[in-house]
Length: 363
Image 1 (tube, one colour):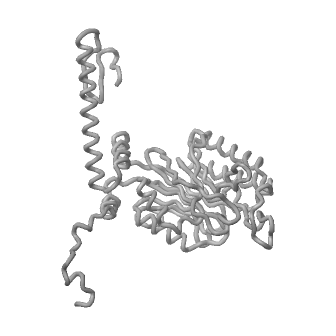
Image 2: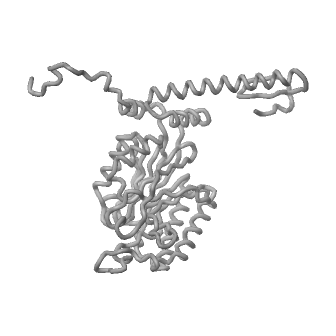
């Protein structure tokens, strides 16, 4: 409800006359209530119709319709994906400072190029080496001794990065170890910093490797999504690219792009194939961010919903960024059809009791 310079009251574009004392005010209030009830009824019908058509939940359908009411149908965003140098010793304060400096330099480059969001690898600040952290190491891999980590230096770098994100007005998603209360092991996490310099959420890796769950980290519990300029993002980390259920879950959460971050020196061609496959099978964007040593075979990049790379970083082992515009596609029929197909579409059409169908030994 807004006031039109005192001349009358408008509710969703309907002029209801001037607000005055007496009977007209009562009629006006009743008209407003009736209009709101009608609008709510129409909204519910639209939500139910979309849910029936696409097979998505009522909540997902409601979120989609509300977004389409508030924003233009087609939304786009300029985003950057990064590959960074690998720092794996959290005892080394100078290395922690160097990783922060490199990350912030890439943030500045992305902002100059017009990016609204930049996505970094797992352990951007530091990806602790299992042998360095092992209390039995380095020869034997055992429980990690997290007292070795320079936590105060790490927090200095996190705070400097948060402040720069606000200064640049750049959404920044990067990997770091997240300390818990002793004696609990830390999470392996992705921090999401808004363009106001606020830590708005954090994703904790859920499906950890054998070494990570046995000796290093506490697993996360929940998927995480956030929105920038009307586009919805999901987060994934570590080796979760191997698990399609992570990505189909985000499809059900109606994301437009999943940000996947990984670490290490050895490139994984399986990860490259899986990133493209998840993008194509779920009809959304997938941003793949890894450390620079992997780039000789698996550079960081952004995969489009057609399962092709939209952009990739240089394959030269250097820290770098790559930038492209991502967009939603409200006209695409792929996602609605797949949701419908997964919602028991075929059961009523299956044939029972026909020997030509039931028998497996006939031509």
